[in-house]
Length: 212
Image 1: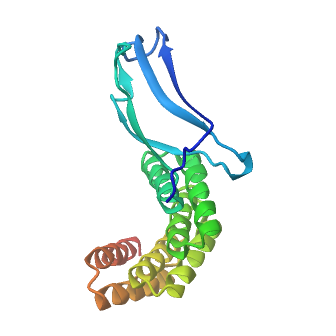
Image 2 (image 1 turned 45 degrees about the vertical axis):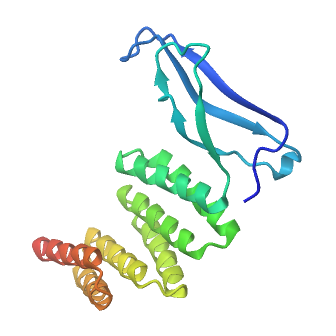
C-alpha cells in the first residue's frame, strides 16, 4: 500500500496521569493516541497505532527519548485489529465495548468485500448476543455467518457456525435440534480433519447429554 502519512500534520499526544487515587504510580507519562490529518479530509480514516516503544506507561520520559510506533491503514489489517480487540474485550466480559469494535470490523470488511472477514465478525457478534441472552439475534448472526462460509466454501467455518447454532439450541433447551446440529458439525469437522472443530462439537454433544 502507498504511504498513509504523506502530508498534513501528525500529532502524538503525551499527558500526565496526576490522579492521586489511581492504583498505579500516578506520576507517569502516558502516550496512547495519535491523530492524522491528511487532505482530502473525506478520504481520511483513523489509523491504528501499535508496537509502541517505550511501553505505554513510562515514568517521566527524558526529552531525549526516542518514541517509535507503527501506523497501519491497510483495510484488511485494520479490520482484523478491530476484530481482535473486540474478541479480547469479549473474553474480558466487556460486551458493549466488544460489540462496538467488532461492528466496526464488520463495516470495514463489508466495504472491502471480504466475505471471510464478514463471516468471522458475524460469528463473534453472535457470541456476544448469545452471552447477553439475545438468542434470536444470535441465531440471525450465526446463520449469516454460515451462509458466507458456505459461499466461500470454508468448511471449518461451516462446522463452527453450525456448532454455534447448536449451542444456542441447547441454551434454549431445544435438545433434539441441538444434538442434530452438533452431530452435523462433528461430521463436517471429521471430513476435513479439523481437530478443534471436532472437540467443540463433541463438547456440545456432551453438554446436551448432561442437560437432558
